[in-house]
Length: 386
Ligand SMILES: C[S@@+](CC[C@H](N)C(=O)[O-])C[C@H]1O[C@@H](n2cnc3c(N)ncnc32)[C@H](O)[C@@H]1O
Image (cartoon, rainbow, N blue to C red; front, side, top):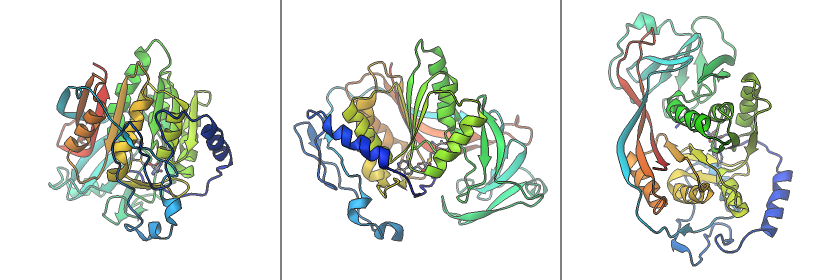
């Protein structure tokens, strides 16, 4: 799973004030307050959500009191009526590189990528085959991530040639941002998502109004910046204060300081529950949840426990003229059909179409122009109006 939840100190004063204010104006009809760790039951509740799993999967979680480890409020899933939207499956969204990125080669459990001026070697469990390029070309890499081969495992960067700084400038879809050597092998961007960003950019540019975009688990903000550059009004949510700081740095680098972007450091589930009570609406929602993460107050995110409710709430947040709800999922033991059928159930009666499959990156060789093998990176499912 790309992206790691970093639990960081966070000043919640203003958000607490907002939460108090929102309690006062909470509409009673749809969302009912529930006791912590116990979902609400109401007339609309057809499906009882599973209680959040308790802190047993990691020592980090075990240290937290249960009350801090689950969202303070939740609600039941709504009973969805109507037909499931028609489906388009499997859809393989492939990118062969764009802007400053391309996948050069892969194999032996590794991948060799070009990010601007740097060639980078990182672990890639799916690359079961042998590399196409000879070893001496791999050995010329500028940076190599070594360490835990588990997805998201800790490790360190080795710079076989010159010692490199933590960041360097990159550009994708015309948006400038910083590449970044992070402790969890990531480089500040997940370039396979460019297919979603490109789709969103086109929708935002062709719209005759500024689209409202919600980017959940937004990390370093590249998707938010692409949307803003295309004229959208963006709300970016991430639990990590550090990631929000990086996103703001990227905003400055992209020359988008004046663009209408709200940077929100909060637990994604908490935020959308509040937005639902407020009656907020968005035209495009991107959600890229990790398998496991934590909100700034220790709120636990488990994809398998919380995704159904997250999508359910996201549906309520879609505007009457919504343009898409896009979900990406990395490193989960599931077929794309799992998220596909969940999306179709969630979007019952909404019309449109649900298309799902995989995001893949095709090797493009040293020159970035020589197509090779396709490397699967993640699952996706998206609802779009017909
Ligand atoms: C998959 S990355 C997002 C990648 C990003 N969408 C992109 O493509 O560049 C996961 C992000 O989720 C954030 N996160 C983890 N748990 C969270 C939570 N409970 N609420 C909000 N954000 C969370 C992490 O801080 C991290 O930045």
